[in-house]
Amino acid sequence: MRPGMSRGQARQLCSGAVSRDERPDDLPEDLPQVGLCARCCHARRLHNARGSDFWQCLASATDPSLRRFPRLPVERCHAFATEGAS
Image (cartoon, rainbow, N blue to C red; front, side, top):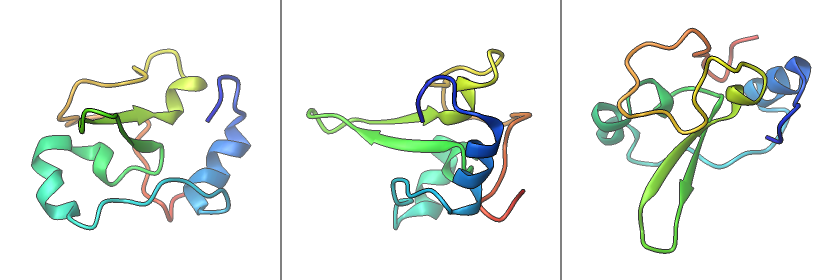
């Protein structure tokens, strides 16, 4: 998501209308280390060349109270939404 993404575009992202990175196959194993981001439709998992994973909060583009790359694990977030949420 680019800065300035509209709320409608963010809703499309959550509904699956916009393609995005796949969730990891080992999701239950990632949950303790990542927290809510592992299940949130606003989160994108990024990999760097050194093999590290980062979780980017796409909702941070429209909500300045959110961090672009939150400290993990995220245990509470007012923007948390699952993929079926509207």
